[in-house]
Amino acid sequence: MSTFILVHGAWHGGWCWYKLAARLRAAGHVVLCPDLPGHGLDRTPIAEVTMAAYVERITQELDAAEEPVVLVGHSMGGAVVTQATEERPERVRHLVYIAAFAPGDGQSVLQLARADPDDRLGKTMVFAADRKSITLKPETIRGSFYADCPDEDLALAQSLLVPQSPAPLGATLRVSAERWGRVPRSYVECTQDMAVSIGAQRTMPGRSGCVKVHTLETGHSPFLAAPDRVAEILKGIAKA
Image 1 (cartoon, rainbow, N blue to C red):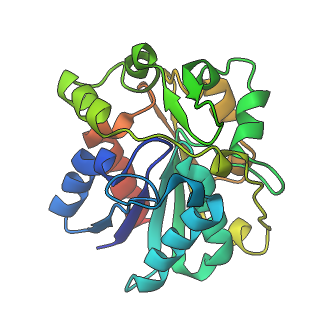
Image 2 (cartoon, rainbow, N blue to C red):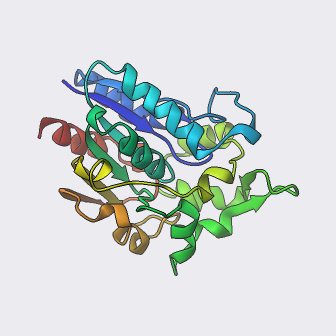
């Protein structure tokens, strides 16, 4: 059996993995779903929420794990797991991106989003007057993130989403072929994604060199809309 660390995206928390985590645990795997700083139950002040803080949280989890892990990142979490893998390549046996931003060296989530001609994420965001936090337009949440998810998961998300610090989104990653690049990685693309377009997913710099690309006909949150399918993909990766 394997150890999985599942890393959520912007505005979310470890709660978003509840369906997927249950399926992987039922198969005998160890599954960790940490809250990044300022997300979920973590009360880090938003002024202290940075990409470095995110990465430190995940490297702590990697160091504490009893074995090298399958490290999974969704959406913005893809950038977090990329940098964490650069810092701890020996602790990651396989890196998995799910509809994720996968920046290359010198790139940021914001840079990749702005480069997407079909960018929809920007249309959902509302900056606070002081520019220190970002929330989502309520009327865009279902269409952007949960279009094909059950109503109860939409309600759950609406009650648990938190303001997002813009600092991690603009943070530049520093990764190398010698460290991050040596870890096997896979990409799970979601063709109906209305947050990170399929075109953007297919041109992510970090996707180059992936050993396998899996395609799901889902929106941005397949771990809620199609948890059985995502679980099967991850279990297959763990067996490889």
